[in-house]
Image (tube, rainbow, N blue to C red; front, side, top):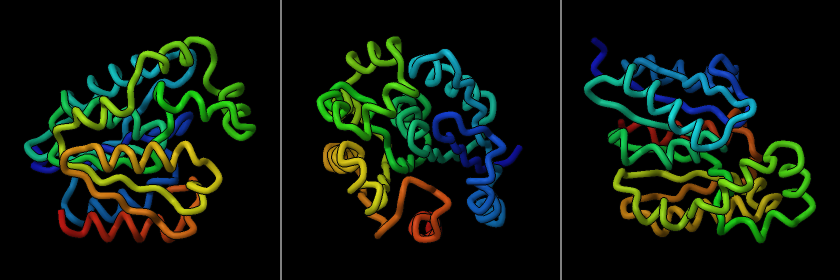
Length: 200
C-alpha cells in the first residue's frame, strides 16, 4: 500500500477529472504521493451531504500518512472534515464564505447573484446553522489558508473568511497570493502552493 496519500477536494461543480489540478497531481506524484481527487456529487445536495460523502471516500483511500487540500467549496468540506479524518496537514485554498457569519455580506450584488444561481433554500438554511468561527477555533489539524489578492478585493467576504480562519485556528499560516483571481490554476497561485508543499 502507498505510504503517503494527498487528497484534493475540488470546488463547486468541479469534477475529479478537472484539468485545474493536473499541475498539482504531477508535482505530488513526483514526490512519491498517491493523489486522490474526491468525486463529489454536487447536484441537489447540501454541505452536510458533501462532507459525509467525502469522509467515506477518504476512509476508503487513506494510507499511513495523509494530507488534505480543498479549493473554494472544497475548502469548506476540508475544514469541516479535518478533525474527524486526522490528516497530517490541511490546505484551505480560497475558502468559500459559506457560514452564518458571512450571511450579512451575501447581500452584495456579486454575492447575491452567486446565491441565486448556486445556493438555494436548503443550502441557505444549512448555512445559518454553521459557524465559521467555531470551525476555525476547533480545528485541531495544522493548516495553511490561501487566497488571491484580486479575488479578495472582488469578494471581500471570502477574504474575511480566510483571514479570520487563519487567525482563529491554533496552528495556521495565511498566504495571500498577489493579484490572483479565484482560480487555482493561476500561475502565481500555483507557485504559492508549490512553495508551501516543497517541505512535505
